Length: 358
Image (cartoon, rainbow, N blue to C red; front, side, top):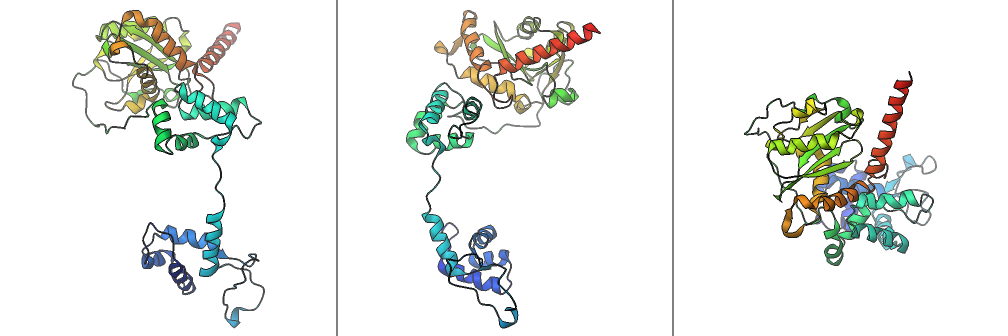
């Protein structure tokens, strides 16, 4: 009777009123009107007449046999329903949270630095706990960025993946080059899988022109370490890991999860020194190492000259890592990964001290 994308007409509301009186189900009424059943259900729920509606002079008809006491129920009536809808549409909408100048200045400054909306929205909540005006949720920031073409052109490029589309990945395939001694990810300890345990890492290489940054991310705190390796061979990639893990205490290097790249074919060296368990994610399932993939994407956002990475760029890589580790994140209660990692190391030292004193 009416188009699915249009508002309910007066005629459709009259049909709803009549069919409700006849005991017709909401689903059946929706089929009669060519509407979704949820549309009819919402209309009845929002615009049902109640005796407390003093502004409505129209009362529903009741047979004499039901007039035995005061009116206690509700009834859907087409006329009052249309008037309630008109009043509801005339009410002013809630204004955007970003209309607060102080809040917008802070959000814009963080977006300009490349922060994603979750940490952008969490910062004011921590810094101004008693100021309700300094509150904004990540979805509001996203909606504001994509509200119109002007905002999108100015701010979408600041998002970590503002110009990327998710590509469909294949699944169920196996590697052409079997890795010797490969331990699959289901055999990893439960505390590593649910991120409740400290000292479990994710490893990967950022493949590019020239040399490759090798990255390690601690799963619980999201703390990032990175170094530049001269080539893509298994010996060079795995050879960089002992140098990164050796300064850490034994409790901070429980195990590491790799992808299925051939650069990690010599992973068994880590089991001897610095004595770490090694695991491998399922083929073509980068989501199983989401923290590491997220950090690699952050490193790729900083373009280098000619897109080439050289061994003398260790200082530039260190600046990128420091920026990532000192950016608040939602998961560790809007602390930075560096702060969360330092707290875990202090707790580990306290535990070792207690064991030594005993």
